[in-house]
Image (tube, rainbow, N blue to C red; front, side):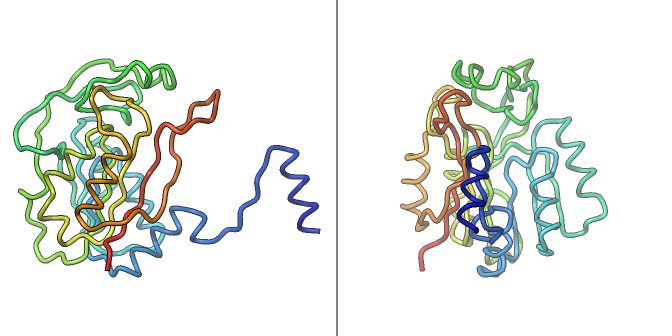
Length: 235
């Protein structure tokens, strides 16, 4: 009966997946946060705060520090965190250095980056076209005091500059148990590191890849463009 139902759904273009934590990233995050006894989530590239808000919805009650440089997105992030005493927000673009930089602002905001957008990105997502720039503060994670945090979940979604953020977080990574990072299979921003570069860096820092979640595909071919990688510190 189950096989027949599954075959029927597949003929309709639908794949049935058991609703279990291992099959859904939002459920697995909640499990990992508990297993690793996370006492601080560092949210780099927070956007409007939806990712962090989802952690709350799925049961995480500990500290969150969210970083978002874009003015409009930061205003929404502030509103999302209002009234939550354990959720701190900062208008900073995390990077490999401290200083100032120019953020390329995209139409959809979520594709905004410190790097210039590559033509391949526009080909697959024309709604991400750059419409201007915004001067922003740059900051290294290691220059920020996270008080007594001993077990950190670091999420890095910064549109092509993930490796810069990690290079500016060498000391922070010593207290980090889990890393979630956006990984690109092709160059979507000029000069960005690719998936193998970020994986190799985190392996050298003592982390192993434990999961991948596809986030962006070529709509015509199905080829992978971007994925979220989940890393856990090796015992």
